[in-house]
Each structure stands twice: as structure tokens, then as C-alpha cells.
Image 1: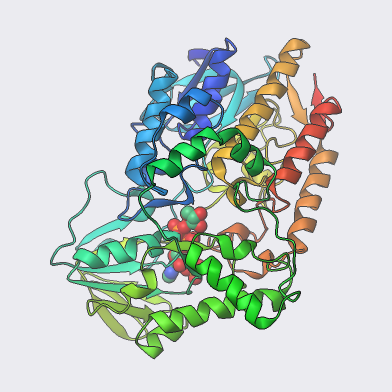
Image 2: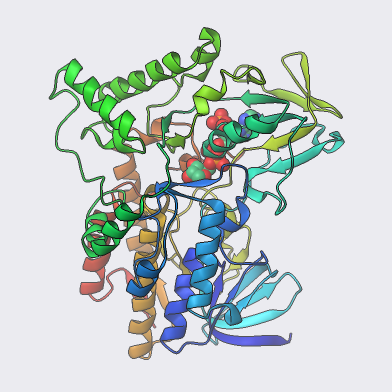
Length: 533
Ligand code: NA7
């Protein structure tokens, strides 16, 4: 076996998590490199180029805070960053911190094996070259393994097939074409209004309706942006002290039933007009008390009924199967309004799934629908998909995938017991996807970096998470989740969207402020739960 390269740190993935990790490693003098399967940086914002792709968190929040120079020099143009703007930002970060020379593009990592003697990892790339490293950091993203449902006959379809999570670089032209789209999660909700603008006809195949709130998107006024920049220190701190990692969404103080029905509805109305996720932060109990949640859910259903002209279509678009906010809440620009267009039809496939895809379209409930192009907006094998895609084995040749067969088990979403020197950024059982992702990335990268430095300063060669502390963390994660309404939803948070995936609630929903306090206490207690050798 020939080792093609030896590194201190190998990082998988050149999204925001990978790039910040690399920057930290290089600034400390480590020999670090990223391996990335795409041909450029950006991660999520490299792959998700579908029409209307946009972040659902405002740009002034969804950005790095670790460099004052970076946050002052970058000028966001839109309230919510578009995919092109976020992709440009990622490239800017890459050039500014001179990272490109340490990134191996077009290279997929297929295997990683821990070697006991050398206390290091042997990592195999898709061209079979092998890289040795002391630390292996998975910055593989939570929503980066596209899920394409296995529907009979999909290979026979004669038109073009797209997946929102792996969209081609050149935007397809849907002009004069009939398009079928499967899926009405965030990606469907964002792309449907834009595709409908050009397509001759758009057929939306909906299995489950989703709650969506108006984004109230706009250009970002320069004075607002500059004012935010002047006060970044304050806003970033407020974000860190919040539950979701967004400065303006501070914990609510009253229950939905502390106010009269009229007052409650006027609070919802204000939040609706403000746009974004504000409504979810109106009351303390919206995500813990089903009756409180019903008041917000019914408010939104009534909005859908007001917006959509056709009564039967409106009713099909009203979600009843899950409490509002327990699936990722979509933010839209004219999503429900799109169903008032003559060229858009909603096909309810909730009771009868798609039987097959054929040459010209698809068949459901005995009816054939024909179209020229098919879009899968069917989401991802979330949170565990990209980790399990790498064959990771420990010193006893036990695979991480087999350890996670009953669901992921991690310590803080950062390490997995018995897999020394392997780190995950925003892994399962961390607040990652339930927070402003870049804030969580920064906190995780800093934590991992400190852990590595602690190990280095004390001349240890390996760090491992203790299984007892891991078990306690998994239990805590589950206890917190089960004190909320989240587990009631059929969602990717639970792994429900992937056939055969064991149901487990994966994100930590105790909030970023609580989580950070726990991490800080662990550091202060000399890294409780971690063992060094
Ligand atoms: P999501 O939110 O997982 O949505 C996927 C959609 O695809 C959802 O409506 C699914 O219906 C639908 N789907 C999945 N499989 C099928 C099959 N077999 N038949 C019909 N419909 C299907 O993914 P997104 O890409 O929209 O968003 C992912 C995250 O990215 C989002 O939460 C943001 O954080 C950004 P279902 O609800 O499962 O019935």
C-alpha cells in the first residue's frame, strides 16, 4: 500500500464548515487539506442551484463572524441570500484566506480506517490513492446526499430529470415545456413559483402539504446593512444567546393562552406581515403544547384559504398531519399565489403513491400525467447520509455505519465513541440544522480546534469520546426532543423520509445557547467525557 500523502488534518467537504476548519488548522501551523467532490467550494450552495434557491435565514445573520475584516468588507445585496450570492461569498472566503491551494477538488472520499499503531487514519479517495492523517474532520454537511425515491420505470423517462440538490450548472430553460415536480418541502416551495413563471405548464405532485410563511424578501437597504455592520458585535452576541442563533428571535415570554384570541391573532398577523420565522417565536409553548400550536397552525391554514382561489386546491394545500414548525418551516415568495395561475396544477398523491414513471410522464391513481421534464424536489438522506456514505472503520474494523444501524449515537454531535481523532462538524445530536448553521459551524470548529490543541499541548496522540458520556448525551438529546412536539412530525429530522431508515430524532433542540453552555462547561472541566491517550 502506497501512501500518497501524509497530513496532520484531512477535512472532507469544502462548504463553510470545511473552509473555516481548514483556516483554523492552517493558522495554527498544521498541515491540513480539504478533499471535496465538487469542482469548487460552497457545499450546499455549490450543489443547490435550482431556480429560486435561497437561504431561509437573513444574510446579515447567515455569515461568518470570526473575521471582523470579512464581515465588514462583504456587502450583502439581498435580505435572504440567493444561491449565486452565497456561492460568491463562499468563493470570496476561500480566496481571502488563501485556502484554494490546500483543497483537492473532484475527489470523493470512499473509505477511512483507523490504525491503532500509528494512532492515525488511512483515508482512501475514489481514485484509490491513500492519504494518512492524524485528524479526520467530516465537514460533509447535513443536507448533501440527495434522496431520489426508487419509483418503477424512472429509467424509461424520455425527458430531462433534475434533482434540486444536484442541479446542473447551466440553468435549464423550461420555456414552452411542461414540467412535473415531485416534492413540496423547502426546495419545492422555492422553485415552484419560479418554474411556473416560464414553463408552459407545471404539474406539482404533492404527497404532504407543508406550512410556509411569507419570506417578505427584498433588496437589503444599504443603510440597514451598514447599521447592522456597525453593531455586529451586539447582534452576534444576541444570536449566541438565543435558541435558534438569530439575533432578532429572542426567547418569547408568554404562553399562547396568556392572551385573548383577538390579541393572539393580531400577534400572528404582525408576524405574518413581518415575514420570516417570526411567528414561531411568538409564544413560549408553540412547540411544546399541541393546543397552543393549533392556534398558529389554523391561522396559517386560514391564510392559505384566503390566498388560493380554488377551494379544493386550497384545502389540499392545508397541512393537518403535523404541528406547525415541527418540520422545517418553509419561507416562500408567492408560493400559494402560484396555484392561482392557469398553467399550474396540484395533484394530490397523499392517498395513492406514484405507481410508475414511464416514457412520457407518470401514473398515479390510474391516471397518466405527461410532461417534458421531471424535477425531483425530494430532499436528502439528512444528517447521517453523507457520513454513512464513507466506509469508516475503527481499529477493530467495526464500521461507523453498523454502530449507527439503530440511529446515530454521538457525543455532542462532535465525536463517536471508539472512533478516535474523528470529528464531525454539526453532526447528529448537535443543534446544527435547528440553528443558524454558520454560527453552529463556528462554535463546533472552535471546540474541535481547542480539543486538538489540548491534545497536542499535552503530547497525547489520540482523543476519544467515552461511551458512558455518549450514552448520556444521546439520552439527553432524546429527552429534550420528547419534551417537544417535534417527534410528532413525519420529517427528515426523524429520518422518516428515507425508506428503511430507523426512526430517531436527530437534531439537538435544546437551543444553541444551552448547547454552548454545556460545551463550555465541558472545556472548563478539563474535557469531561473525552479520554486522551
Ligand atoms: P424535504 O423538506 O425533505 O422535502 C422533500 C419533499 O419531497 C417532501 O414534500 C416529500 O414529501 C417529497 N417526497 C419525498 N419522497 C417522495 C416520494 N417517494 N413521493 C412523493 N413525494 C416525495 O427536502 P427539501 O429539499 O425541500 O428541503 C430540505 C431542507 O433544505 C429544508 O428543510 C431546508 O432546511 C433546506 P413528504 O413530506 O415526505 O410526504
